[in-house]
Length: 190
Ligand code: AMP
Image 1 (cartoon, protein in one colour):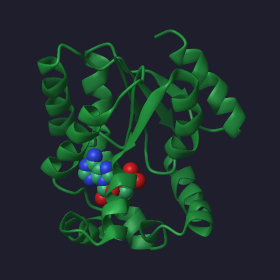
Image 2: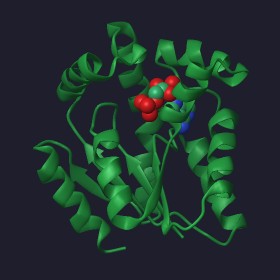
Image 3: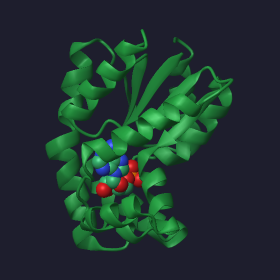
Image 4: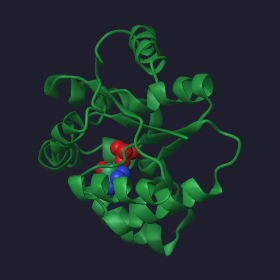
């Protein structure tokens, strides 16, 4: 099985690119953000717990997202692998993912990191807010906190995956098609 990690700051275009990636390489897309939004929409206990944290632009507890990931891994059939989008989000999650995969004799295949400058992040999120209507895209304070959380908690993963030789970065600026063809060029190697 292949385990690709789609990495990058909020608004880098991960969700936009994920569908083409999963179709071309027969991967299952696992977006922890989307799974959490589904729980919130369904009004589950887990959703209730997650909502306040998501609305504040903070991370939800590791055990919540890791439980979701494990259950997605277990239920997948007839695929070549997974595309993890929005997970891992901090070093503890990356270590837990490595341990989870090692138990099954597997490992992370590669990261595909979409990078955009900070000034572009807010612009992209504002644009998405007008299209998708995500609650956490609509509030300036939430957006700022998500960006701060990214720098503080998620960005150190660049070093984590560089150390294991699994870090691959792609310039996320440009048209959707331009970025997509760069992603495919990279993924074709694995
Ligand atoms: P996303 O759709 O990936 O931007 O995620 C939306 C929100 O869900 C984030 O701002 C976090 O509050 C929460 N979230 C998503 N993935 C994770 C994760 N791996 N760990 C903790 N919180 C997460």
